[in-house]
Amino acid sequence: MNYASASTLSRQIANREISCTELMQETLDHIGQINPEYNAIVSISDHSMLLTQAQEADTALAKGEYRGWMHGFPHAIKDLANCEGYVTSCGSPLLANNVAAGDAIFTHRIREAGAIFIGKTNVPEFGLGSQSYNTLHGATRNAFNPALCAGGSSGGAAVALALDLLPVADGSDMMGSLRNPAAFNNVVGFRPSIGRVPKSEGDLFTGSLSTEGPMGRHVEDVIKLFLTMSGPDTRSPLSWRGNPGSAEEYNPLPLKHKNIGWLADLGGHLSTEAGLIPLCEAALQSLGSTGIHIEHSTLDFNMEELWACWITLRQWGLTNSPNRLFKNPKTRIQLKAEVQWELDQAETITTDRLAKAFDTRSRWYQTINNAFGQHDFLALPSAQVFPFDVAQHWPAKIEGRKMATYHQWMEVVIGGTLSGCPVISLPAGFDNQHRPMGIQFIAPIGEDKKLLEFALAYEETLPWQDAYAQIGK
Image (cartoon, rainbow, N blue to C red; front, top):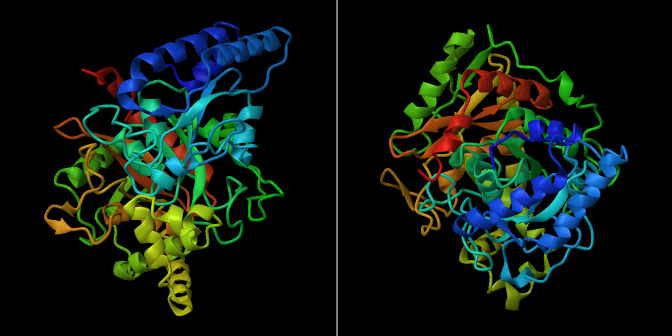
């Protein structure tokens, strides 16, 4: 494989410079060589069946039947979402035989764009925690150092991209699950605005903490997959009714006179691993040649109160889950300890506490929205630590400070989630141990196009793709 962008592969297939069968065979061979060590893709389908589907895609193309920009693409759906005929295990042995009877809305759209599904990408059990390990499929290892973790919950997707096992990948994000693994594997993860990607499962009205979104090695690819996944659907009552435009309408944003508010560690509130903040700041300073203005910024908000809000809403969402495994004591006890803890804590939530959390979230949105009166974008690190030992479930301490929960080390991502605004993680570089890190940029609600156009300009100034050549060396 040669790390061609998904957009390049798309053009080559459309022009019949490469066949779908050739791409599928190369992909399956590459997965066979690389995936056993890294464990990014799971539940891989029968190779002969996949090659037959690729041949059918070639035959259709020969007849002038072009299905879309993903025509003949090998694709693996994140193992939290349904893909007809594939197991949706959610990383749990309790769902090892849970074959999906149909597609999620966004999965169907990817299918309609011409993709051929080859398997699923690995996740932590039920997507909880930013370390993609589970007892069903095992752990996914970091693309740049298999001794380290991949992040999560879209860890399998991020590693598959960085290793060129997939042209482009889907993921989902509640607590940074598109952003953290993107940062840990030097790829792009984009969390769209609330409602941009329609929901077809779970609570359709109050389940706004989580959303699906695209990942890629190139921003152009992320834009195209975003446009494929997004758009209204009557089955999703809060899905956005606007027109996201076509990929051709997205151009690098002129950065001169634009302004980034750098939030860093939120005025010392967040613990961060040594070297992480300076690495991100060096990347931001490299944007100086574009004429963009970067200034340290603070938000007048009680961040302890925001964390309490997050804990409440996250746990309330779990206790509202229709998942029968969460309700049944016989299966609940078989879940990993962190899931059980979340469910136990959820049972202590009172109506007063929930009402306070809703009020806090509303005030937080107003604070973020007001900040955009001074800044075009807000920025923070995409994580508080660099990738850590794959055998470690989560960091118990950061620079000597004890983490109160299994996910407090990910607190840096909750502000973007709770705002509902679009957030993108872009590669920031590597530390002296060659561990990747990213920066997350936040734009005003609904300004997904502006944020993606900023990402195109960032990519022109600070391209990161050459780093993939160092994998395995």
